[in-house]
Length: 167
Ligand code: PNS
Image (cartoon, rainbow, N blue to C red; front, side, top):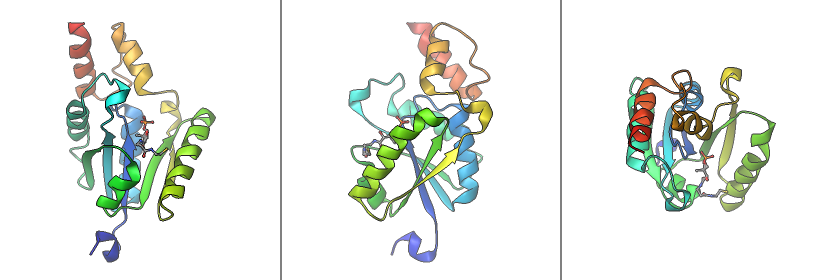
């Protein structure tokens, strides 16, 4: 029997997390208070050419969420809804930063609901101080050795320094 039959609300927060930022962490911390269990699921997509491997991304997520007992870090391939079925989860969490996020998010949420009518997507608005923040912006700054200490957790800052020191 699935955990949901016992009234557990399991939510999945899917994303690339390449790497996790303070904005992601804000959504993780806040949604972990709303749901009984939150699975942060890193997309293992070979076509996207990420900076960090899936192992590196999940390891960083594990480090920065180690104080949150109901948060689990995992990865998935292919379709999110198939992964959700495996996990007996029906709830998706996504962060919304600005209007510019909305169109893409609406498209994804609608597609996921079309593929599986039991799937519900919950949007959490980002804390305003993080509304400009993205993994791409962080990588851009770090690539040119700019300061990212206010944008990402310290473990991620160190990992970025290591990545860009070599190249
Ligand atoms: O952090 P991102 O890159 O905005 O996250 C996007 C993600 C991983 C949530 C999305 O690309 C995804 O779910 N991909 C898996 C493929 C899938 O299920 N697509 C159908 C929904 S359109």
